[in-house]
Image (cartoon, rainbow, N blue to C red):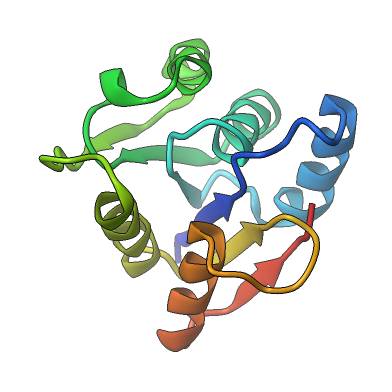
Length: 152
């Protein structure tokens, strides 16, 4: 059975070091990363880009990038991470939303969760909010899918 994992997380990652994120990913993504695993990643800056680079450099898992519009509409940091990891990305899904705003991001997140067996979320530390990360985690929970929450 292929394990499919949706990754969601904050775009605000400057408050921790890259080494700290590498440790978090090793601890919380590493146990789920094997050659039969597939990770769905949103292709945005922040956790998405950092997780992509870590998975591409440290695992043999399959990686699928999902963007609400096109890759060219993504922030520079995200496009650079995708380019650097291109040889490790199994598929890039461009949902081609007319307007890349809140509803398009929510649709992208639901698309990833609908194809996953579980969700791993990296929200900003603090109380549960209304961010896209929390919406994605909660959507997975509503679908009865296991979810792991790693506050950053």
